[in-house]
Structures are given as C-alpha cells and as structure tokens.
Length: 381
Ligand SMILES: *Cc1c(COP(=O)(O)O)cnc(C)c1O
Image (cartoon, rainbow, N blue to C red; front, top):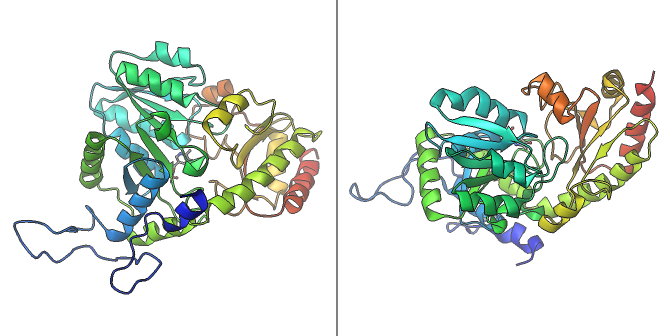
C-alpha cells in the first residue's frame, strides 16, 4: 500500500459489533474469562487493551517492524526499552541527545548499575572505539536534537551487529513516514508520540517497535511488569493523529524548507541548522537514509540577550516546550528542552544561549515569516 492508504487503513481492526470505522475506545480494566484454566485474548487492562493494541499494530506496520508497544510517554517508552539491560551493562549514547533521555541515563539507571557514556555518533569510528566489553546498547537520534546532526544508521547498526549490541533509535523527529531505522537493520525504534505522530499538542504518549521475536517477548515482559502503559483514550488520540501524518508533514516540511532558506539569508540570524540546506554537513548522508529533512530547524542569533529579547517579543510562532504540533513552536533549548544537560557540555555541543529551535506547523509561510521577522527586528533593541 502507498503511504496515503497505509496511514488510513493500517492497524484498523474493524469494530465487529457495529462496523464503526473509528476504532472504539475500550474503557475496560478487566474482561470476562470463559475459562479459569486458559485466559481469553484480553485479561486485564495493563497487559492488553483492544484500543491500545490497534495503535501498537499500526505503529509496528508503519515502522516496518513486527511488534509495537504503547507507553504513557516518550520517556516511558525509552525507559522501558532501557529496562532490557541489566546491572553491569553499559549504554553508549549519542552526545547530542534529548534532555529527558540524558536525565534517565545519568540520573536514574546508574542507581540500578546500568552505566553509560556519550559519543559523537556522527563519527562512526569514534562509536567503534567507544564500545566497551560491557556495552550492550547503542542509543541514537538522527537528526539529533537540537542541532540536527546526522548519524549513519546503517553503518552504526552494522557495527553494533558485529559487536553484539542492540541498536535503539529515537525516531521522534522523522516519524516512519520519513525514516525507518528497522529497515536499516536497527533493532528497536522509540518515539515520543506526543510530537508528530499525535501531531496536535493534545496528548502525551510513547511508542516502541521491534522486529525480533525474542526481543519483543522481553519488551512485553517489561511493559507488563513496569506497567507504564498508554490509556485507551490517549491511544485513540494518537491513532487519530497518525491518519493525517503524511499531509501534515508534507505541508510542514515545505514551509520549514522555505523558512530555513529565508532565515539563512537574514542579516540578524547566525547559523541555521537544517538538513534540507545544501551547506548542512550531514545533508547528503541524511538524504540516503530518509525521504525528507523534516519540520524542525534551529538557528542562532547574535548572542544570548538577543535570543531572549527575540523570544519575549514573538507571538507567532508560539514560544513553548515541545514540537511536532499543528502550531509552530519556538523552544529555547538552553532553559527548556536541554536544561538537564550540564552547562559546560551544552557549550561544547554548541547548544548555546544564542540558539533557538523552531518546529514548523501548519500556519502559512507568509504569516510565520512576518512573525519571525518582526521579533528578529525587536531582538536588537
Ligand atoms: C519529547 C521527546 C522525547 C520525550 O517524550 P515525552 O513524550 O515528552 O516523554 C524523547 N525524545 C525526543 C527526541 C523528544 O523530542
């Protein structure tokens, strides 16, 4: 099926009672058992719910995987996948990482004896030499957040396969519409479905997809044991969002490209980070593993004070945390999305006080350009 069709019809388990085309929301914590020896298909709401299962099948199909899992947030999905590791094992993660994942790796998992280190994953040789005997997982984001750096997924997956590591990719920025890491031989994909998949800034949700049966059984165990499952109402909202993923992303990406080009030529803007710009160092690699540059870009102003004045005066796009919604959002990584990273490290990465991240929504290019231009003019005051 083509993407247009798949997004509308995949994972749709027709309602056998009344034939509703929308998956019914099963608000049920428990199910009648016809036999006490053998449980029915559904037994208890934490281990299974028909609405949640429809979403899990939908995302598994879209990612080109076999088994999908829905969690209460993106961070819950990431934490649950990290729970596949054991004490004494080590996670090698990309340096340019989502703040919440950084918090999990540095603040929570060390309590249980799971260690970590960070590497510039855009350099495959650096990844190879950072692997330790106890390393069991490689955790990647590409394009990375917030600097949109590109990692070679196939090369990392090959390396990980040779060294017996699990490759986990946070595919939140791209969604399966633009990039499918499992098809490049990665083992697991995680999502903050709060972002593009949900798409309307009205739900917090997380997803994971794997292909291997044994890995799926282990993750199923964690999902039930740890219990950070997504509720049926929120599962339905994510499914509703996914139906329009292609049209939203096509339109948002087109505007993002135009804005990136316009900002690059703006006298008050420094560097623009966007894989759709020909000068982007990872643009060529990105185009071999994805079908588009996406809808998120970052740019710098002359300094931190200018960035703060800019964010104080802007009305459109809206200054807020998060991304991927129908409304364009401006985020200040230094104090918002990446506040969990140590200041020295932020400086080293280039996530400075002068950096602003823009998630492009569905407003018109003309209105967004005008709103940004006005606030840029006020940033010099
Ligand atoms: C938002 C985000 C997360 C965390 O997801 P939540 O739904 O907020 O828990 C993880 N990774 C990336 C890349 C994100 O943007």
